[in-house]
Image (cartoon, rainbow, N blue to C red; front, top):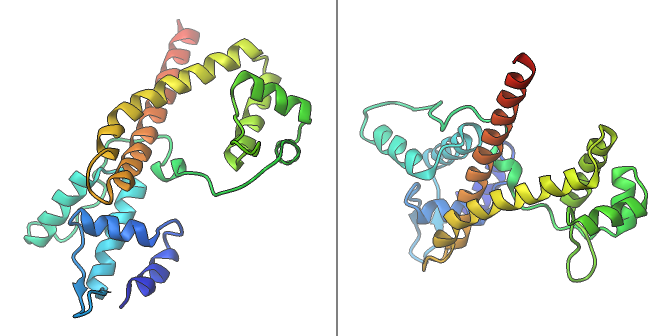
Length: 225
């Protein structure tokens, strides 16, 4: 089957998968579709099953491609019929939750409507640096989510200084992830940026999960002291 048919088949279970993602996995040597004389990719049912295994392992177990490759090699050699459940540990969030938001062009009024607040509150959070419009002055769906969450925290008593502290902490965590992913993004392969984005999503899920677990542990110790 063609890559378009494969994409339609996989989109039923993995709606976020793209042609670029499939080509990226091929460039990493995880799948090897046949090629026609004119160079077009042709996939078998076995190829689709292999792709499904890779995507599910990434999504559900947050497994790095290096580990997935080892699992596939073990399956190919007959050492195992399937390896599932190997992960980096239990995480609070999934890596696919950190994909780039869908392209949206929200005005401050749109953000206020989605977050259930006033435009003045949106402007206040933008001034704090929690959300930042693009060059044309538009926001994304993620910005609307930030506003909604920040206002919920304010209802619990978080003031502007507290929210700014959370913003700065997030920036430091993003910097750590970027430091690890940037060398990959600067690679010479055509899929370097795609690979860096994949790694960033996986690391973000781990960092956020670790942060959340540490906060939970510290609070438990605080109130049980």
